[in-house]
Length: 141
Length: 141
Length: 141
Length: 141
Image (tube, rainbow over all chains, first blue to last red; front, side):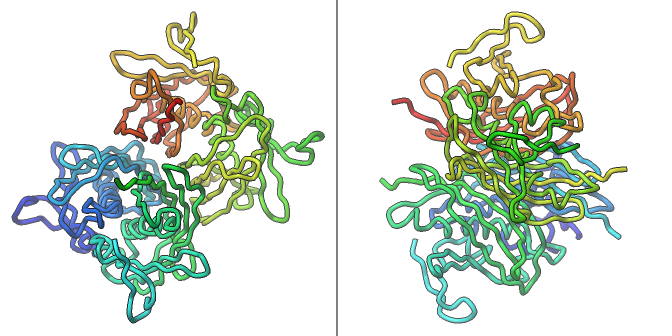
């Protein structure tokens, strides 16, 4: 799947994947590398919130699932890809329309078949979701 | 938040919540009660899939988060509501455009402050996501 | 690892694994098959409880980890074995010295490399731990 | 529950809780504070391993459950205590008899009723278990 580069606006220079329909539906979510660190981000719009005006848990988990692959991308590229096999999260705090949401994390272990990732999503710098995910490598034949 | 009733089509008679923006963004997802059992469902469209044509993990987790509240609704209504505080899932199998997706589950314990729910999402009857969630009651003042 | 059969007492006829030191330390935990169903059980002794007199969370999780393999044993035997790669649980209720603790569950999917299991531990018939685990097959060379 | 201080040996000066029977059964596990950081540790003995000679998953999870409270202790003491309500973990690597096992982590949020903790257990400095736990405060009456 080909990454595109955002051309203007707040996320100019960040990458996104228009070939992934649900990431556009639920996001769009953005990715870049900065000093060797993977950053994922988006800004909350009305479409992302629940009936109480707080970012929907499903939106945060969709973004976290996107972030798993951002964080692990150096262990997947260029020849392979992966699928999430397990995901856990705790909801620490709400986030509102207009908030800047960012995910950072680390690969705890990249094995031959499984990659273990953990991270934290922040809203305006405050932790709002803790997450861990297990990615299974899929070999291309 | 007020439930609306679907008027026609495949989900005629099911309830949905247009007042929850992200559920419309990522779904829409539908709910009904049948013989005392909570059923949640939707049918996969192109907007729900990832770059490989399989339902996006974030979509399934968004639907599971919706289903937590469907499964627990009798323990929340009428005066209270709740927020997800922890969520875990395992991805068992993929699902494709056109598949009928359904979630069923059970409340394992409804305490004074926390409600514990587990469930399974199926695609055309085959298990595709196992999930558990912890809901914290929020008291209205 | 060879299973032994309990010869007398409450668990006469159940199997256990004296070749697994920690299962003897934290347990011992017992296993049998009944009408094609895997049952795992033990009875709470003083050594299993925490400072408040309730079964320690670590004891329940150790037993749940034992139960994962009991529940999945038909998918592992006879030539292969496995290791837990991910585990999640929610604590529903306490249990006390003298309680009969039992785990039951099901294999949600047994794939070529991963086996997904979920189950519930009960104390005197009441749910006390909800758990899910992912087992990775290890091929013997 | 009263903490005791280890008087001699490798863990001299560390605290432990003989009033918690299962922590002695599965451990003993040790705790100290160093420069404001909570450290939990033990050294692997034969009683802690499984049939393959690797630390049993249940042992690591028992230790992680102990570590949750070590990491959160400043948010619990002096008047309150807590119980684990949810726990998740991923197994990154094995550990053997003789290995020094240590847990470190952080409180991601300490709310009025729930405390969210995450941490990593290392064996001889290498990550072997990633864990997250949710503690519910219990008010003393």
